[in-house]
Image 1 (cartoon, rainbow, N blue to C red):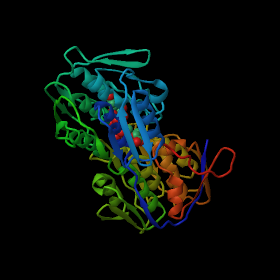
Image 2: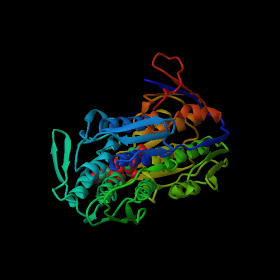
Image 3: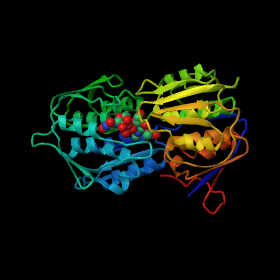
Image 4: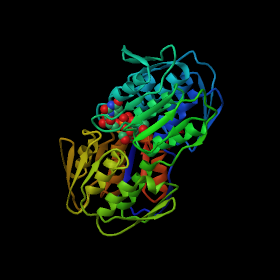
Length: 433
Ligand code: EPZ
């Protein structure tokens, strides 16, 4: 397993381009199941999760060829509609093939995704929405068995909110299943995330009739069939936010290019409250070095509020802020894995009942730490960039799931970061894809 070794307190400079959105690409690649025509998907990030999704699609008879930032697909056969446990357990987002399989083939067997380190990852809302459309669903031996009734799926009015509010992938699955259902479907309390809008826009380009994506009420009028997809996914807002924090915590005048600042307004507002100056110019965000950030409180909630996927990275910034901050996690109340590792670096953080209280320290000190989940690992990289001395982060495969060659890109900004394999010698990121 690879590790990162970071020598901290290096000022960064220059600009970094944002990759395509992982959380857009994963559900959008799944719509290749819904058409018999050849599809092209562009701006696809070079990530392990994309590799897993391509494997799942090939298992489902969708020939998927990934070259650089493009994936081309063509349905070759439809006799296997089982997304296997060994792939779905690696990436729970594999559950997003459920709606497309039901819409296209009338049946799906998808492994129950199980939980992960950020908390229990239920799929009750996915199943509730699909059953509302008429799907017959049973859970057997760790698998979801879903079948459409004889007459096919029928449009319905569905309230899709859970105790944590809307669900991104449940909205995706139900929207995909409704696209070729008979009649009209209304999804109330739909997720409004930009990635849901990107998926809806891709489906509309394929001939689907969808209104209201990006609002809590999405209306879908069923159509008979879909044309080919030819779609470039949106930039990754979470990656953009991660790099903005890297600039803020190292007081570096870096520019983050090719992003969508309008997808990050809640995050940028929290940084503004902490006194971090980030200039917006078109698709570029530029960090303006200034005084030490001020402690700031924030709560994670469904979009357009502060994204839970930006929480750990921002906690790393609050760890060196002036004063005491509180972070309340309303999406995944246990999602504070970064805290324990940041404390090894001198951070003063206490976590209880879904809230972290962070008492800012003057500086962090480098230490041996362990990556645990994608965003907590990114927080450790950010902390390592700012810490005094050397930080060694083990199990960086977590980071490779969601950040493309992050160490090479940070090195280009002047960071002193190397990837080391278990043997200790430096390696470059395995070509993913
Ligand atoms: C998506 O996951 C993202 N993943 C996650 O990003 C992100 O953290 C999450 O949305 C929230 O924004 C992808 O898009 C691939 P949810 P998803 O369903 O759709 C509860 C990353 O780091 N819930 O919106 O699985 C759930 O427990 C990843 O890139 C139910 O109760 O998340 C959570 O508390 C991590 N029942 C809340 O809703 C359900 O059926 C939001 O989850 C589904 C979800």
